[in-house]
Image: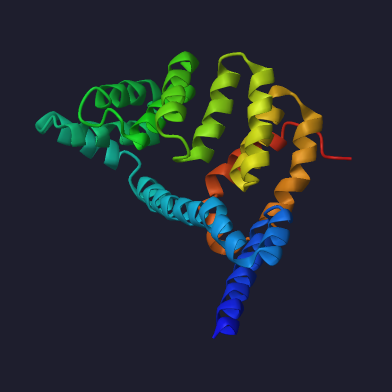
Length: 253
């Protein structure tokens, strides 16, 4: 019977090892998985696999939302506005904030999210993240940093990668370019995900740091080399922004 348990641990470790290779994670995970199959598998599940799976679910929802916007770009914003006007509840205010953010009405979205945080959703992580993103995109970096600081203090580890990327973007918008660079590099070292590499590359290209942008290009190609169609679809918007950023710099030598 003990052999069955050992065999199961190895099978699970092999499953996660395959995920390491497919997703372009650091090869150090392989050492942890094979030298300590049970402990390594548990650590990998909670540190990488589960957060990625959760992110995929959220991204799937974004794809559906994007498709709806393509068919009727103003529908959700229109309906959310009507719902808020007819029934001014906290839920409808939140729906309006989401719709404004998706529609590119960043200043209005920032105000709506801020209003939501005054009520029963004051400590809601998604709303704080929405507020931070809206403030970054509307050019109000100081307010964005305020909400990101709250997230780091009160919800440590929750949506950690998104918080880290937004923090780097907020620091950049606030004119703290060296701090932004350090934050991007820490995010890559911690998560090593496509989103982290892509946002750093976009920042580098837009900041005129051509050398960094070109260096990151090979890392991005490595991470995306084994993507399937679903992964490419889920990351279409980021890839479009990435390609647009690279068009403005010379090709790598």
